[in-house]
Amino acid sequence: MITVGLLGCGNIGHVIAKGQENFRITAVYDSVSARAEAFGKEFGAAPYDDFAAFLQEPTDIVVEAASVAAATTHAESILLAGKDLVIMSVGALADVSFREELIQTAREMKKKIHIPSGAIMGLDNIRVGQISGIDKFVLRTTKNPKSLSREAEEKTCIFSGKAYDCVHQYPKNTNVAESLSIACGRDVDVELWMDPNEDRNMHEIFFEGEFGEAYIRVRNVPSPDNPATSYLAALSILSLLQNLDNPLVIGA
Ligand SMILES: NC(=O)C1=CN([C@@H]2O[C@H](COP(=O)(O)OP(=O)(O)OC[C@H]3O[C@@H](n4cnc5c(N)ncnc54)[C@H](OP(=O)(O)O)[C@@H]3O)[C@@H](O)[C@H]2O)C=CC1
Ligand SMILES: O=C([O-])CC(=O)C(=O)O
Image 1 (cartoon, protein in one colour):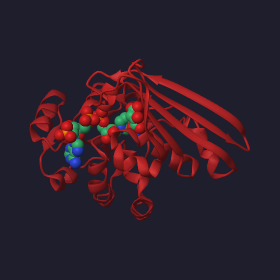
Image 2 (image 1 turned 135 degrees about the vertical axis):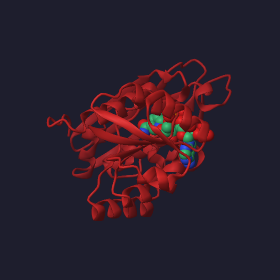
Image 3 (image 1 turned 180 degrees about the vertical axis):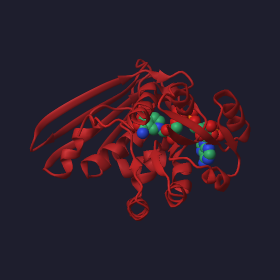
Image 4 (image 1 turned 60 degrees about the vertical axis):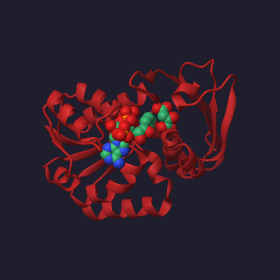
């Protein structure tokens, strides 16, 4: 049985806890210790309010499902503690030198850093961008203003630029852009829209290169407990965990 330490007892944490089958969450940590305690009581995991003590639990893998700040602060120490790592707050990896240091640490510790497909489809084959030419790569994200904790009367573009720059302004909405950038090997172009007539979290990917062209559109149901996070993102990490010990690997 794979044992999991969970960093962040929020929306995604609860979805994966409810889907435990071939893995078990045995230790949890959250910046709000009452939240970790309640989570621990509900799912039978040990709650921690001290991160160093949390790392001493003999878990195989730590799932970060908290925030870009949490991933930035804790990722290195998780790897140094000899644990594999799943990063949901992928925006933390926009800083190239931080990302390269983390990969180096993982290599030295013989550990893996997993980036789940998250709120999109097709991340696996987008890696072809690293081995063949790309002419165009644009991510257009459209959400209801409520999912962005904003208000708007009409469809409005609130960001247009590179993924790297988006992370500083919209850390909760840059994970997809950063996952795509890492997958295809370049800082992708991003448009972020809010639309009062859109009730889904929509991600459209326009990708052209030597292979041909692709248009991927995902219209995600927002998570009831956190409308900024698509339910697909939580399902994606659950699927990743359920397949960790599966000898049959699907996808690129
Ligand atoms: N890769 C992808 O495609 C996607 C990634 N995400 C990312 O996944 C992460 C989790 O999402 P979700 O579960 O919906 O978020 P929630 O806000 O529902 O849960 C996160 C929990 O982690 C806590 N937390 C935040 N920062 C820290 C910290 N530094 N140390 C310890 N605990 C912390 C939060 O506390 P508090 O409320 O006090 O901040 C909260 O309890 C987010 O960063 C989100 O942006 C989401 C969707 C798609
Ligand atoms: O759709 C989602 O779940 C979140 C999102 O935009 C992102 O993290 O980039």
